[in-house]
Image (cartoon, rainbow, N blue to C red; front, side, top):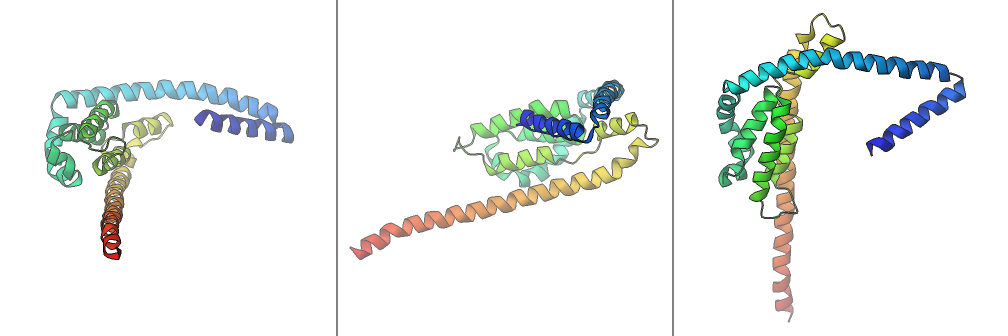
Length: 213
């Protein structure tokens, strides 16, 4: 899908460039963009290596484990079925803690492990559980205390105060995480009521047939 979208965008750009006689400007923009992309990659590499090293030190020092213990009482309410079964709760705590600390590379394998554990306790293998959906949402909209990538991008773009975004990021990520969980729980509640109503209706139909006979 991404390849098709990219092909359409490039085709439209070339078409309008030829139509308006600006093909040379588009060619120059392509070359300049490629040069800037390489420069940006090297600019980001240093900052990302620095923050990855700091996050790895925090992980080795036990910061992720301590944060997991702090989050456990809260996550117990967010993932009630997982905590009841005990399958995947440690991986969930570790993955979300890594996301909060900005260790995205460490969070990915932990999130996959958590999904595998929850899937093993899932009675319906063809359908994700409510906790699995909520976890996927939290993984995409987790609270971010150290937005290392954004800070590195701002620094590479020449910002004099790249850390000024910390407070807005904290507010926005917190709002997104809370909103995502609430919407997930609301959808799960609506689905549960519909299924309950459907099962009740199916149970009443044989009775009506028997009474009619």
